[in-house]
Amino acid sequence: MPVSMTESFIQIRRAPLLQYYVAVLLAMLALTGLLDLFLSDEVERAVNLHHIIAGLGVIAFAAYGRVALTPLPITGFFAALLVVSAIAAIEHGVHPMLLNAVYCFYLCLLGLLSARILGRQLLLSALRLSAWLILFAITVKNIFYLHDIRDTLSTLQDRVFIPSVVAGGLNMEATFALFAAVFLRGTRSYWPAFIYAIFLAILYSSRAPLLGGALLFAYEIIAPSKGASVLFKQLRIAALILGGIAIALTLFASPITQFALSRFQDIGYEPGSEGRLVLWQTAPEVFLKNPMGVGAGNAIPDIEAALGHDVQEDNLHDIYLQILVDLGVVGFAAYAWMIYGAARRGMGDKGHNPMWIAIGLYFLMGVLQFRAYDPFMFFWLGLAWHSAPPEDAGA
Image 1: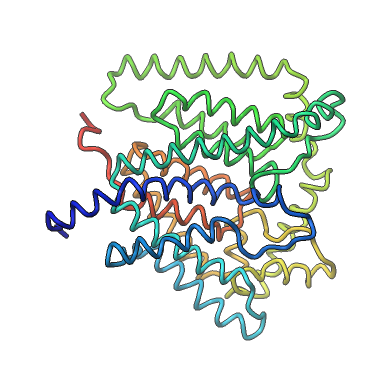
Image 2: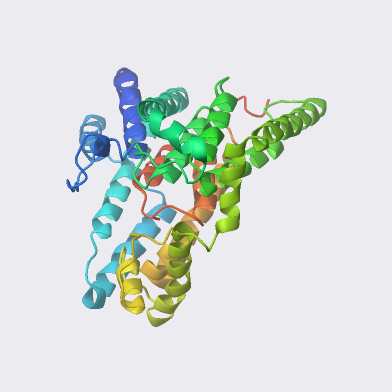
């Protein structure tokens, strides 16, 4: 819909401030464990920093004067979520995760509106600023715990265990470092940030981020190059492969890397993977008993009932299994429709917006981690959905 010259001028004046707002919100949606560094372990919180910052988004809605409607696939998923959870609540009750799902929908609306006001260039600037905020927070925190890191690495008898600025532990922290690197794609800092993220994954002995890094590197090999000749593309692929081999050989020579890679041999024989395998083995049983779903967030309580004891996890660490058990066949079909819609939008962008690469990486790595109702991902979807490649992208 065309806008008047006055409205366009107002949007331009609002955009720079909104750019910083989006950058900070993106960072805080990642740095969900930041408050835990300053609070006692006994303090339980229902509200995080990103909730407060996201609440300020109401100002953006009021200033803009209207709401950017969610695309049909996203609307369909949340409609299915609410209907299935409402019906399942009769037998299984209402889980607090349902409120988090509503928050995800709000963030998607906020992302759609923010992207519409900002435009492509300011949005890319916001992404890059958020990446630096995330990497800065991780680095500063690790400097404070450098003594503990050195003590652990001196013996290599166990993994590095220090506080994380990302809720979910060091695995998630290394994952968000990888996402931050993706946000810097298209700048000179991208590859250094990528290597730093891989370094963190090795330092923390985190399997999922290492696999995510391998997927991202494989994508870079086959990714289309803007306006490049066939020769340049071939040289780029050769350079990436040779550079990857050189870095891999250098890293593999390190005892720290060898220790991190040895964790892949321990799958099924150590507490972290044992707990997940138990959840994954029990989840199909719960689904077969409740093919229409148990309601958002109720998968873990029902699995605990099936096992006859509590589990330490609060999610299945598999977004697809989580949706299948929580929302049944209808909710899973709606989620698959949303992913299909996102995939079509992302492939149409041809890698020009790094947000789509991060979203694609999320859905691939979601087989091993994440909660499915992740606020950051739905904010990403809102920011990316209507983004268009630059006019000269195919030149």
